[in-house]
Image 1: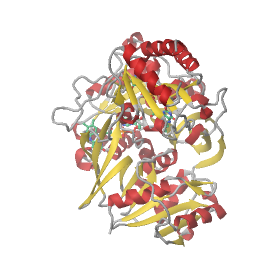
Image 2: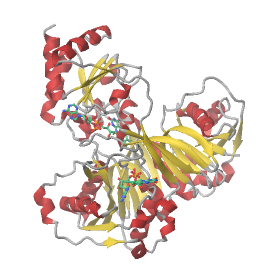
Image 3: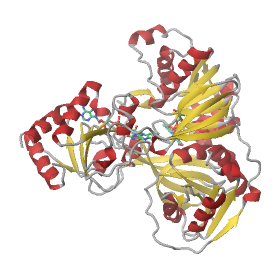
Amino acid sequence: MEILVCVKRVPDTAENEFELNGAGNDLDRDDLVYSVNEWDNYAVEEAIQIVDKVGGNVTVITVGDSESEEVLRREMAMGANNGILLSDDAFEGSDGKGIAAILKAEIEKGKYDLILTGAQADEGAGQVGGMLAAMLDLPYASLVNKIEVGEGKIKVGREIEGGNQEMNEISLPCVLSIQTGINEPRYVGIRGIRKVAGVEIPVKSASDLGIAADSIGKAGAKTKRIDYFVPDLGAGAEMLEGSTDEIIAKLIEKLKAKGGL
Amino acid sequence: MTQIFAYIPFSNGVAEDVAMEFPTAAAKIDKGASLTAVLTGSGADLDKVANDMTGLYAEVIKINHNDLAYPNAEVVRKALVNVIPAGSIVLAPHNTFGMDLAPGLSVKMNASYAADIVDFAGVEGTVLKASRQELGGAVSTHVAIDIASGAVITIRPGSFAPVEGKTASGAVVDKSANAGDLSAKRKFLEVVQAEVGDVDITKADVLVSIGRGIEEQENIEIAEELAKAMKTVVSCSRPIVDAKWLEKGRQVGTSGKTVKPKVYMAMGISGSFQHLGGLKGNPFIVAVNKNPKAPIFQVADVGIVANIIEFMPELTSAINDL
Ligand SMILES: Cc1cc2nc3c(=O)[nH]c(=O)nc-3n(C[C@H](O)[C@H](O)[C@H](O)COP(=O)(O)OP(=O)(O)OC[C@H]3O[C@@H](n4cnc5c(N)ncnc54)[C@H](O)[C@@H]3O)c2cc1C
Ligand SMILES: Cc1cc2nc3c(=O)[nH]c(=O)nc-3n(C[C@H](O)[C@H](O)[C@H](O)COP(=O)(O)OP(=O)(O)OC[C@H]3O[C@@H](n4cnc5c(N)ncnc54)[C@H](O)[C@@H]3O)c2cc1C
C-alpha cells in the first residue's frame, strides 16, 4: 500500500509561552520552539504500522519553508521511506484551501492508496484533510482512531462525542484524518535523525507543480488572519501569591468554603 | 440580502443545544439576514425536531431519506450541496460531526471556510469579520472571511448565548425531492459505546484532574495521594489517556466524560475548549500551572503559578495535617 502522510511544522504548545510582538499583530516568533504537529506523529506511526503489515511505502509531505525540512527528517527517522517538501514564496499566506490545493497538485502526480492527515494542527481548524478529499473527489473520514485494512476497502473507527466510536467502511483510495490515541508513536532519538540526515528530500515549487500563483498564497486566500488580540474575558482567576505555605493556607480556606475539604 | 442556513444536528428526536445558539450567531453576522434551519434525517424523529425548530427559525428545511437516517457526513454533504443555494452562508457546529462535514462542503460549494468561530463582528461589503482561537486557546485572532461567493463556517458550541423561548413561528418546507444522488463511498456500520471504567468520575463532588503537566507516568502517584487526602479520585485530560497512563473512563472533555463536580482541581492542564467542554455545573475551579499565561487561568476561580510536581505533595501534607 502506498501511503502519503501530510505533516505540518508548528510551534510547540508545551514548550512555549506565547506573546504578541511589539506591534500586536503577530506572535513574537523569535524564540519559538517548533516541532511536528502532535496529531501528525500518530498519522505517521499508523502509516508505518500498516506498511509493516501489508507492505508498501510511507511518504511524508509538507508545505512550508526550508526549515520545514527538519520535520520531514524527523518523520523519516520514525520510519517513513520518502519525504517531499513543497516550498515557494508564492505559497506564503495560503489559507487552508490554498494548502489543500498545493498538496492536491503533488498528490495527482503520484499514486496513493491512502492519504493521512492529522485531525487538526496548531490553528485548531481541522480543515486540510476534508478539503483535500473533496478536491480529489475521494471519500473522507475525520477523527479516525482505528483502521482495519481489507481488500480494496478499509474499516475505520471515528471518535465521536463522549468517546464513542463510529465504525465505517470506506473504499480505497481515501483520505483520513487521524486522532491522537490511535497508537503510541515511536520515540525518535538524535541517532535516528542523524541516520536520515543525508537522505535527499526533493523540493518542489509552484511551477514544478503547475499551479497558478494567484490561486494560492495571499492572493488566493479567502479567509485571512487580520491580527492577534488578547480577549477581554472578565476578571479571570484570583491569583494566589506569597510563599508556598501562605498560598496553601489561603487555598485550604477556599477549598473548605467551597466544599472541597 | 445575506442568506444564512444553519445545519441542526440532533439525536433521538432532540436537537443539540447549538440549535439555540445559531440564531444569536446569525444575528451577529447580519441582523437583516434571512435564517433557515436545515435538517437531514428520516422518519418521525426528523419530523419532530423539524417541528420543534419552527419555534426558533422562520424557515425550516427538512430533507428526508433512508440514507440520511444516521448522519454520515459524506451523505449529508451531498444533500446539502443540492439543497442550499450557492453563495449562502452555512453554519454548522465545530464538533466531531461538523469537522467531518464542513471543510469538504466548503470545497463542493466553492465557498470560503472558517472553523471554530467564537464571535462575529458583522459584515462590511463582502467581508465578514470573526474571532477564533489558535494554539489550544493560548492566543485569539480576528479573521476576515470573504463571503462574496458564500461561506461555510463552524461555530464553537457554547460560545453564543442560546435564544430562550419560542421566538419565531416558522414553517417546515420539505426539500427531500431535491436531495439528488446520495450514493457514497463511505458506509456507516455501527456506533460502539465507550467502555465503562473502574472509577466513575461523573459522580464525584471533587476531582483532582491532571494534564500533560504531570510530565511522567510515575508522577501520577503524587496526584493519587492528593486525591486520597481530599477523599476523591483522579481524573485527567486527553493526553494522559492517549499515553495510556490512565484509562479512558477518567478523561474529562467532549470526547470523554461530562462531569459536574463542586470543586475541580486542574493540575497542569492548559484549558482547551474540548477539555472544558466536559466540565458542567459551574464548579469552583482551582488551576495550578507553571505558565502564568495558560488559558486555564481565564476560566479558573483561583489560580496558582507553580510546578505541580512540587506543589501537590505540599498541599497533600498540609491537608493531611488538618
Ligand atoms: C505567517 C502566516 C500567515 C498565514 N496567513 C494566513 C491567512 O492569511 N489565512 C489563512 O487562512 N491562514 C493563514 N495562515 C495559516 C496557514 O496557511 C495554515 O497552514 C493553513 O490554514 C492550514 O493549517 P491548519 O492549522 O488550519 O491545518 P489543519 O487543517 O488544522 O491541519 C490538519 C492537518 O492538515 C495537514 N496540514 C496542515 N497544514 C499543512 C501543511 N502546511 N503541509 C502539509 N500538511 C498540512 C496536517 O496533516 C495537519 O495535521 C498563515 C500562517 C502563517 C504562519
Ligand atoms: C475532536 C477532539 C476532541 C478532544 N477531546 C478532548 C477531551 O475530551 N478532553 C481533553 O482533555 N482534551 C481533548 N482534546 C485535546 C485538546 O485539544 C488538548 O490537546 C488537550 O486538552 C490538552 O491537554 P493538556 O491541557 O493536559 O495538555 P497541554 O495543552 O499540553 O497543557 C499542559 C499544561 O501543563 C502545564 N505544565 C507543564 N508542566 C507543568 C508542571 N510541572 N507544573 C505545572 N504545570 C505544568 C503547561 O504550562 C500547560 O499549560 C480533543 C481534541 C480534539 C481535536
